[in-house]
Image (tube, rainbow, N blue to C red; front, side, top):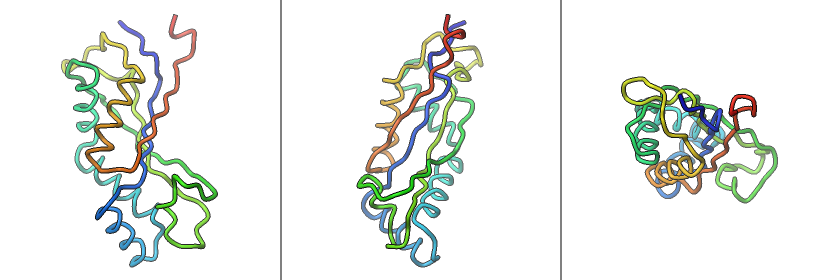
Amino acid sequence: MLTQTYRDITFVFGAPDGDRYEMLKETAHHKNLSFSAVYRTYMDEILLGLHGEGVFDHAFSGAVGPELKVNKIFPTYQHWRGREERFEKFFVSPEEEYVEIPAVMVFPPQFTDEQGASLETDVEFEHANFVSAIIGQSLRLDWVQVYGTFLSEERLG
């Protein structure tokens, strides 16, 4: 059995562009909500409503090689206080001081092949970058950031 290098990989999703961004911004305005709240709900619906694990299954299968199952995704968010250029689209009103950026965590040690057996291939950061590019282009996002947490040293040896 191969021990994976990463305990988890997190994908943080920047704002969409074009008409999708304008639609979400208008929804936030009409419902008197923050863009962050509307966007998080939207991303949850896309990733969970469309069988989000399947989206990641296909993307990681394309990156890693063999067909695989991610088996678990965990929707979450990052909380940022203060205005930064990369978050500009999230601030749709002048009184907003913080943003919540939608994110999804996946757990490579839980990845399996289609039959449920442990993977014989280590999921590398370059695979995660490939997946982020697929998702970013598919959803027409301004950016997708990827973070990984290593397994502890004693589990790698």
